[in-house]
Length: 149
Image 1: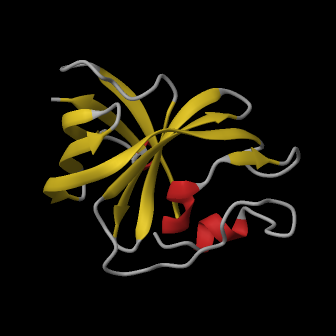
Image 2 (image 1 turned 45 degrees about the vertical axis):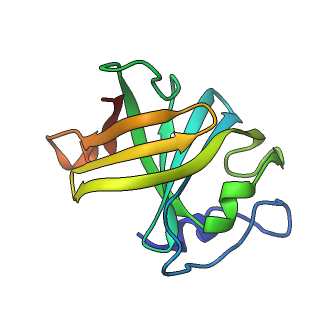
């Protein structure tokens, strides 16, 4: 996906979000950001392919095995975003408070276009997880399930 969508949605003269750039070879970190925007949700991000692959998870990342939650894929974010906490100004895309809820490393175990399996090693989230893409129409392609295995 790259960072084109990310940059097109933001005015970096108004927001303190990092502009960043793609950085190949930096993988293996994850972050969960609690995002008080128009609706509270959690942004789950995995460092892959030189960017943070990102999903909005409305009900939070499951901590119990077998619990499945909707995860809506959003635009890739720069790796620098893994350290971002602060206020996105009113009127800007994603306006609201962003706090780091958890952060750590991950070990990728399986990857295909429709499935990621990984081990999280964070302060709060530990253990095996999977992201599985919904099957169906093109408009559903951004919808995934995240679950603790």
